[in-house]
Amino acid sequence: MNQAAKKKYRHMDGIGPYDIPLEDYDMSQREPFQNNTFWSFFDRMRQEDPIHYCKDSKFGPFWSVTKFKDIVEVENKPDIYSSEPTIAFLDPNEDFNVPMFIAMDEPKHGVQRRTVQGAVDPRNLAGMESLIRERVCNILDDLPIYETIDWVDKVSIELTGQMLATILDFPQEHRRKLTYWSDVATAVPGPMSIVSSYEESRKILMEECVPAFFNLWQKKKNSPPETSLISMLAHAEETSRMTEENPMEFLGNLILLIVGGNDTTRNSVSGSVLFLNENPKEYDKLRENHGLVNTMVPEIIRYQTPLTHMRRTATKDTILGGKQIHRGDKVILWFVSGNRDEEAIDKPYEFIIDRKNPRYHLSFGFGIHRCMGNRLAEMQLRIVWEEILKRFHKIEVMGEPQRVYSNLIKGYSDLPVRLIPA
Image (cartoon, rainbow, N blue to C red; front, side, top):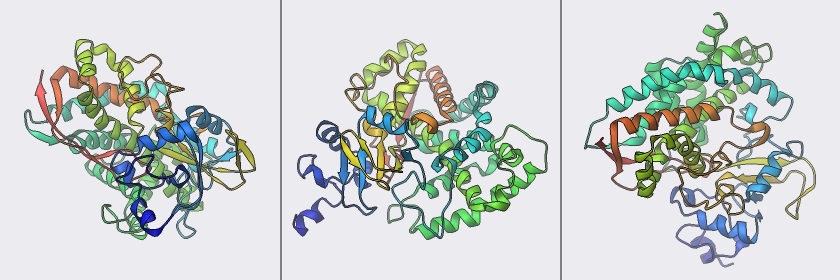
């Protein structure tokens, strides 16, 4: 390939899936995700090369796992496909390694996960429903009618910020800091980003996020145990000395809880409005039968797929889909592709709010690392739409959404809408 050709599709932008050889696909690029042009590349990979090897990327070589069944196979073999040292393309920086339990293997992963899982168990969630509904109602009732607003800022971010502050017992008046730190932690440095370098990200997290949560940790540790996540970590035997013994692990788990509590719900709340506008017959169906909210919610999460992928690292030589995987190889599980796999999901490119078996998707992962907050995310999204339908005939999208510059977070930074009352 000549240099002109390389430069032309270095970012796989402005080209189609058959404009370049399959062997030259590099799905680690961010531009196709920001421009929403990545779908057809995964379609071709699923058809022709479902376990695809990229030999040259800015992150080094990696395997792309694109089909539903192969992703599930990898997720079910954590002894062969490790979550360590990271779930991201980029290897950890030796000077700034922030371990988190989602990027740990057993037994440590299970110990830390079980410590905080109680905060989102069914009994605790049942007690939170009335609070979530109250806050959703307050947010929706404050919105102006017939005026163009940014749905992402006014609703999606506001709701998830309030709920994340509640779960962490973080001061509500500072809830937007949680959203900001989440964005910083997942940001790709550059001209279109909120940070210009990874060093800037590190500085913000170490100088702002860590001190705030260290103070909260000390407060919770010196108080009786509660059901907030920080209190659970501060009082559990396995994690109570985390701030003293492994402060970077403390930061890593904070980032995990903040990002995990923010991105799925936030981007699904935004995406749901977009999908119903793109599929007006489904919107009509929902207006006629509000009970369809229950099946629509998991369909929204499948269709959105807020987290595009996770990485695993092979612990030994193995075979996957007929391909030889070597010890140490990066293996990328493309949830966003698996959720459009025609062999696993009927009419996967259609948004169907009364889909049979709507929870059959990969948006929450699979196996031991399945998202522990999945029911909370579903509950928030359900309540949002139950209350929307009481108030508004339509949330009308007034312009193109702005998507985030990321190959990991499939989300929105802006969605202009207008509210039409019921």
